[in-house]
Every structure is written in C-alpha cells, then in structure tokens.
Length: 85
Image (tube, rainbow, N blue to C red; front, side):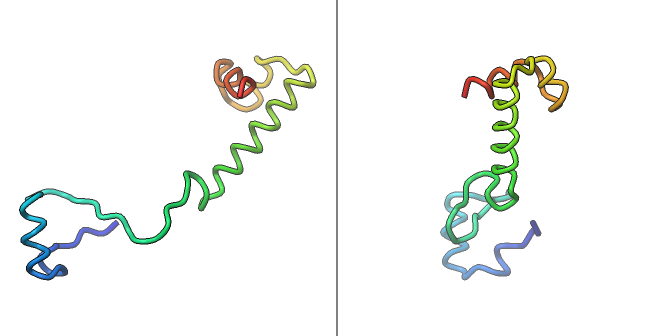
C-alpha cells in the first residue's frame, strides 16, 4: 500500500471535514466493492478445509493424534480441535 497525501488528492471540503475527526496520522480507507471472506481470493480457505478433511479422515482410519500432528506439522491440541469440529 502506497502512502499518499490527502491534501493532494481530496477536495478541500472533504479534507477539512476529515480533519475534524482525525489529524496527523495514518488512516486506512478501505476500497469499494464487496468484501470477500478470509482466504477466498488466495485459496487458503479451501486449502485448510481440505487439509482438515484429510485429518478427520485419517483419524477415522485409526491414525493416532500424535501421528497426525507430526504428519501435518501441528500440535496435538490443534489436531484435536480439528477432529472435534
């Protein structure tokens, strides 16, 4: 994200209005458009959903929590949480 000076891009009346609420700092202004859920654009959501399905399937096939933890690089506690979901 690139820093831009609000004085150089906003109309004066909007700038003065913003200054009534916020002065001298960094302000994030989100873009227009629909918000997407976490991981939707990057594919991370589907990746972790599939990983968790494989973990549950492995547990159902009598692979121990410890083995699953080692296989997926997760703690046993994290594996148990995934299995309980």
